[in-house]
Image 1 (spheres, rainbow, N blue to C red):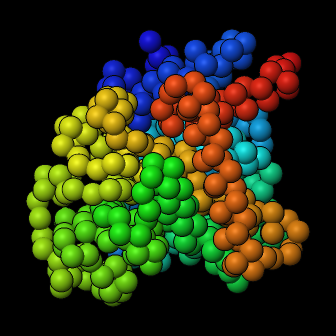
Image 2: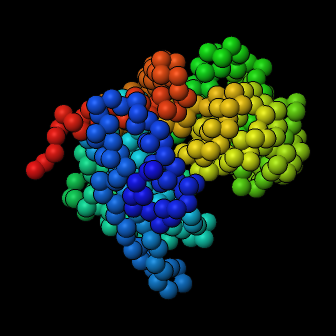
Image 3: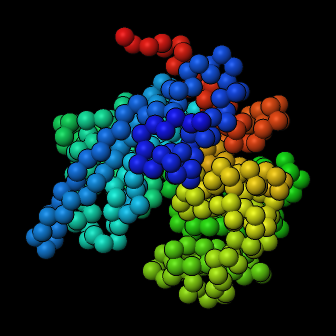
Length: 425
C-alpha cells in the first residue's frame, strides 16, 4: 500500500498524487538494494503554499492561492513548470513535481523535480491583473527559486510573457538580472530557439520511433490528438508534415473529426485568430464518446491528467498511446491497455522535449552563448532517441511496460544519487 504522503484526497485512487505513489510502488521490486531508499520518492522535499493578494482593476482586492512543490533535489536544482488553472491543488502540484523528478532522471538531465501553480482561471483576469498576479506569486515563492535552486517554466495557461514577468520580478528582488531563473522566456530575454515547439516535437519523435519499432511508419498513419494547444497542436502539425492523417482533434470547445484528414495548419491559424475548433470548416463535430472511439494508429492525449480512464481504455481503438500530457492515463486504465495489447509511451519520456530544451536554455543563459535552432533540434532528437531506446531495452529485459521501465531507469538514478550523498546531518 502506498504511503499517503501529503494529500488533500488520500483515499481517492485517481488523485494525481495517489497515481504517482502507485507508480512508485510498481517499480520498487526492480530497484535492488536501492529499494531501502524508496520512501524518499514518496515524499516531497518541500511544498510551499502562498496567499496571493492583488488589486483588481475595479479597485477591489482579490486573493488567490498558489503553490510550489519541490519533490527531490538529489541530482540537481528543481525543474518544472507553473500552471494557472482553476483546478490547481497541492495534491496535483506534488504529483507533477514527482513526475518531473522521474522525467528529468529518465532523460539524464541534471535536475530534480518541481512544479508550481495558481488556482485561477486566467481568462477572468485583465492583462494588468495577470501581470500583478504573476509578480506577486514570484515574490512569494522567491525564497525557494533561483538559477541554482529551482527553475520554473511555462505549463498550462502560462507562456513566455509570464516567464518574462517572473524573471524580471526575481531579478528586481535580488538586485541583478538573472535570466537563468526561469526557462521558456522570450528570445530577447535569453530564451532558446526551438523551446516553444519542443514538447510537441518530443511527442512526435517518441511516436515516430515507437511506431517504427512496432513495424509501421508515421507516413499514412491515422492520428487522433486530444488537446490542441502548444503540445497537441504542434505535434499534430508535425504528424501532418510527415505524411500522417490527423483524423480527430479535441479541445475545450469540443471534439471534431474528418476521416479524410484535417488541415492542421489551417485549424491552428483559425484557433490562433480566436476561433473555436468546433467551428472550423472542413470538420464534423462529434460527441466525446465518438471521439474516444475513433479508429487510429496513434492516439495522443495532450490535455490534462486523468483523461484516459478505465471506461475510455476499454473503448479506445488504437495501436499506440503517446502521452503528451502529464498523468493522462490512470493506473487502472494502464492495466487495461496492457491487457488489450495497446502500447503506451509514458509522459515521462513522451513529453520530455520541453524540459530538455529548457535545459539547453539554462545552459545557454549561464554561458551567454546561444545555439541555432537546427542545433537545438538535433540535440533534442539525439537525447530523446537515446532515452527511448534505453527504456525499450529495459522494458524487454524486465518484461515490464514502458512506463515501469522509465521509472526503473529514473528511480535508480535518483536513489543512487541519494545513497552516494548520504544523509545530513
